[in-house]
Each structure stands twice: as structure tokens, then as C-alpha cells.
Image: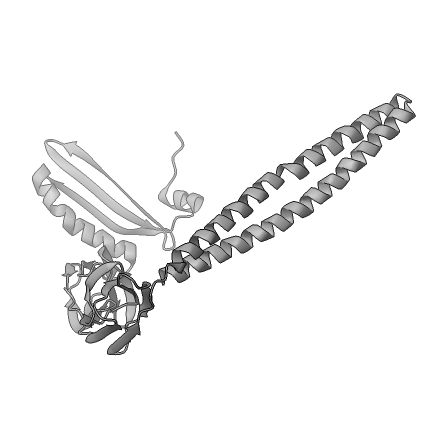
Length: 313
């Protein structure tokens, strides 16, 4: 097996820092050799040799790992474990975003740092905290929800069921807690059309709606729009094979005409070519018909969606 020096191996593989080592048993002890070679400096920048019983050597591993981490990073370090509530909160160190959501291990520069934790709809937490060198610090703040205030929702006539993001919230008139993010509200009352409305985070403190009687036209219009869509789709589907068939027939008769010419049969060749030209005209006509029916289909889809959304409020 070909052997390489650490310098040759780093040059061959394009490695800046090579970490290696070995562990072996010597006279009942475990001997651990650990080293790191810096290709730029051309020298060993970290070296450790430890000999101990198994449990004693295992207890030394965190200390050796800390020393080796500093060598790899090229600077002093501290570990942050970010486990906030809510889990999607963001962590900023000295104004710089370092984590969006829970993170098990963040290597940062130790010292006194400004910590800011924020999440939409929650009160922000800002404080100074000292992060000790080569140690782990867990940040597990539970953020408090912002007091968003209340919205008075009323309807004419009253007694409509209010749903916010499909969750039943009560019957009008009622007081509703302002949402922290954009939400969708729906008012529903028997005999009246459902009414949908937006609930942004900055919604006004009073919302009043007039419900329109349901005269039975919404379902009828939606059914008609759906039937029109099905009819347009059927005609388009039926039209698709026509240009494909005509094109295939055009190719077949054109090849037959060429074959008749090669066999010195001019009358048969002329007849085959005339038929092929007829099928070519049919191909272009079929393309035009399919394109027209596809335009009709798209128009019916748009109409169906528009009617469905209007019926749902």
C-alpha cells in the first residue's frame, strides 16, 4: 500500500487541516494518540497522547474534544443550544440572525453578547448574557403572546356562526381576540349566503356585516358552471385523436405514394399522394378545432372557479 506523509496527503486531496489519531492497548492500558496537521503552516498544530484505563480515558474525551474544536475552528468557542417555545422562534446574537427554529448546537464566539429572541405574535425577549468559553449554554425561553386586543364582530341579522380559519368561535355579536397573523373569517347563517372576510393582524376594533338572503341561486349557478366545464372538457377530449389520426394517415399515404413512384406506378402514386394531402388538410383542421376547444375549456374552468368562490363567499 502506498504511503503518504500528512503534507503530501493534504496537497493531494486539497485539505487545509488533517485530523488523525489511533487508539491501541499497551500492557493493559489504552493509548490514545490524537493530532492535527495544518497544511498552510506545514506543521502539527495539535497533539495529545493519553494512556489510561478505559473509564479514565473516556472521562478525558470531552476535554480533548474541546481542545481539538478550538484548533479546527481556529478561535475560541462557545456552544449554544437553542430550544425556544414556540419552536419556530428566531435567535439573534448582537443583531445577527444565527438560528431560525430550534438548533441543537451553535458554535459562537464566547463573551457577553446581546441575545434577542422573537416570533410573530409573541413578545420579543432581549437581554445580555455571558457565554462562557468552551462550554455549552442552553437558551430555552418561553415567549409570551402579545396582547393583540379584541374585535367586536356583528352581523345583520344577528346569530350568525363565526369561523376563523375553519375553527368555530361563537355567534354574532361577539368579541374576538385579534389574530397575530392574517386569518380568514366566515359568517354562516341558515337562509343566508355565507360571507367570507379577511382578518389581518391590524384589523379594526369593530367589524359589522350585512348578510344576503340565499335565494337558491348560488348552488344552481355553480352546478351550471360545473356542467359547462364537463361539456367543454368532453368535446376537447373527443377532438384530440382527430389530428393525430389524420397525421398518421397522411404519413402512411405519403410513404405509399413514394413507394409507387419507385415502382414506376404513376397513377397509383398520384392517387396516394392526393389522399395524403387530404389527410394533411384534416390534420391542420383538427389542430385548429382542438385549439379552439381548449380555449373554450380554459374559459369554462375560470368561470367555474369564479362562480364557486363567489358562492362560498
